[in-house]
Length: 235
Image (cartoon, rainbow, N blue to C red):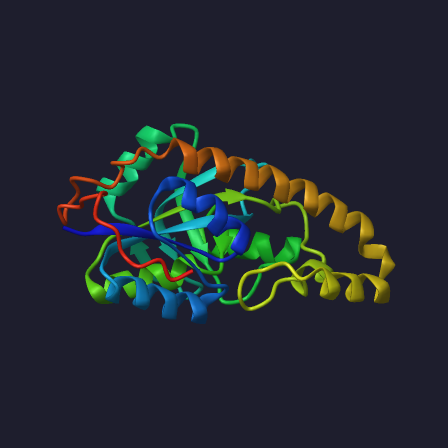
């Protein structure tokens, strides 16, 4: 019997995800997430839940809104359907989550214009950098996946460049890089303050979501999952 694993893009997200009791890996961005996803499946995971923050694309989603993906859409229009059984179990546990399409991107969708274009192109309500890799790897392995994300930066707000510079390859926030960029452009201070507030709302939603996931959430699924059986935590 096998158990699902969780993949996040930030160390803060991984810390919250461990509250679920499932094994967790942290890998930032598309390429690193693909490597981590392969390792999780090689290590015995039956499938993967992509968990963390997302950029908002739909104007009605405020910071902290939870999104449960029906499918992940890439920038070329390919669609990767999420596991219906896992969607149903997560929706039962988190009825406040919005069930919708999530876009997968290889680079941050930083400007309001970029978000509007991606929304129009894909029909997705949110975007992140790891879910597409999870979807592709799980399809290649013939394994199920799910996506549970919380909106941080909403559709109407751009990401300041100082924030984009502040995340290292291990998913950790590096204050020195943020301060260096801020010193070069002090005008970003207000935007960073708004982002910190938005991020706090998103992380609070993820904390509650992780605590709400029942221990047997992914048990009894199509692969006969047994939550008592662990796999190696690669984070």
